[in-house]
Amino acid sequence: MRHVLHIFLLLPVVSGILSCSPKQPARGFDEDVKPDSGNVYDLPDIEESGELIAVTISGPESYFQYRNMDLGIEYLLVENYANAHGVRIRMEIAKDTAELFNQLRTSKVDLIAYELPTALIQQKGFLCVGAVSDTLNASWAVRKSSPELAESLDEWYSSSLRRELSAYMKDLLSKPRVIHSPKLKPYVPVHKGELSPYDGLLAKAATICGWDWRLLAALCYQESAFDPNAVSWAGARGLMQIMPGTAKQLGVSVASLFEPEVNINASARYLKILQQQFADIKNPTERTKFVLAAYNGGSRHIRDAMALAKKHHQNPQSWQVVSYYVLHLSEPRFYKDAVVKNGYMIGSETYNYVNNIMARWSQFKRGIKGRPLPVSGGVNQMPVISTPVKSQKRNRFTGKSSEIIPRNDSIFQIKE
Image (tube, rainbow, N blue to C red):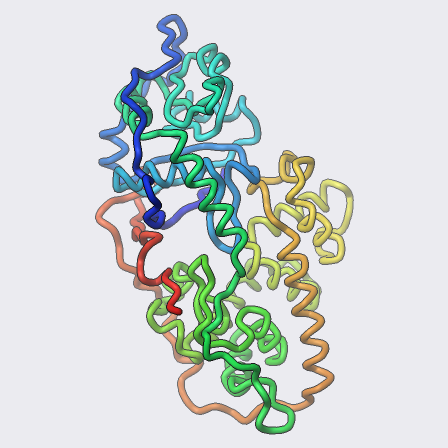
């Protein structure tokens, strides 16, 4: 199982976002079936722990990650509910309905956030609650030992909320990945053999991850077109499109991500971490492609594609082989495979991302033979120890603190 969230993100204000359906008793109550593990863990306990744990089945409508953001209608609904109660969420992934019920029965999760037939939920002895389909034949489920959670979910949910969040997700997926500064103009090199105004910074930072500086430049161009003020709708910032969560893990303040030197340095340090994660890829050129793919699509999805390659008796250390499975992780026969741990992925973007950067790197190498002039300053002297702000509440299983960053925080706002 995969622990998806380390921060809790709030949804932006949407008209009627907290509209509620009329209060109803929890549905599907069957006194004769006793599936619970015996542990009473209800809404007050969830609020005390500061974390709601839900389980779902990954898919394009339920839950997936795209451009470093958690999406899916079921996920967004859980997030909205957690927002109302001021708690973080953790979304677990199950392979099938049997695993969904087992996770709930053994109290590993608080809620099944996946529409299941109400007759099946009743047969298994759980409560049908919350997100009920318009046909009233499918719903979420909780244990009978969580009556307050069940009542609260019933009061919170409305079909209009589902429609609003569906429209919100559709709008996000239709947006361009990066919003550039209105002042950005195509860069014209001032000196022969120059790629960007940041060549010196890129060359010095490239020594951190051991890359050709022109490869780092190709990555920079792919991410932001050399725009230091670029912002993605997912909240990534600056030249190398660093996410706020990644910045904090690296000990870099989110406010400094628009500073070219800081942003490029953070990217190089993150690339070094990814290279360590893929140290089992022995060929350096192949490893570079896997690292680029992980930078864009997340290392867990890339590992899933490698597992698929291995299962089909192909070389999991060849990007040409593995990229095929990355590309097809959007298809049920692949993302529902038993060896896939992290579910659905829109793999076409990552597939094209790696190809584009490698092609541009080849162009840069043909056009630029030398290294740029060195840059003075402390590019390699950034702090390594992370000191993120801690929340008051703790993960009830791991005991670790997490900062809650609302989705409408200023760090996610795009300034026109």
